[in-house]
Length: 201
Image (tube, helix red, strand yellow):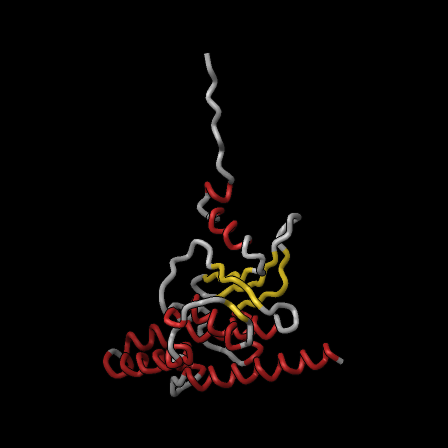
């Protein structure tokens, strides 16, 4: 009686966590991977270099880090994604010049926070091949759309406003997300610039 050989798939493939065909294609580029992942409350980003002994993380950033730069609003929205990308891009200065985008198994949606994070990295000076049309516009990146929607809800449904925007109202009574965004962006640019100068001395 002949015995059948059963090929067992790799664990991460079985669990739906890794697309190995896509991973091999990214690695074959010879460039570090810009890994962007999102959760409901945070953004997670890394620049990863492939090694036969295991991937090496060159630098990383998490939206929780934005708190020390003055961001006291939702850390999982589009403005926070952009700022996390900007922070990672500034951290990578002098370490990485070019990378390929790796969004894993996440759905690619034009203008989403995944691409807001990419825009932040690009504005920090890192070269990542992309199509301009996938990036969110400046108003969405700054959070202007959030401010406009909050104001609309405040006038039309006060109860809904309290449920969804109490955190915003507590931190910025006028609900001008753009103001906090610009202050946080400026703080990231100044702080990372100081760190780069210190390292070069």
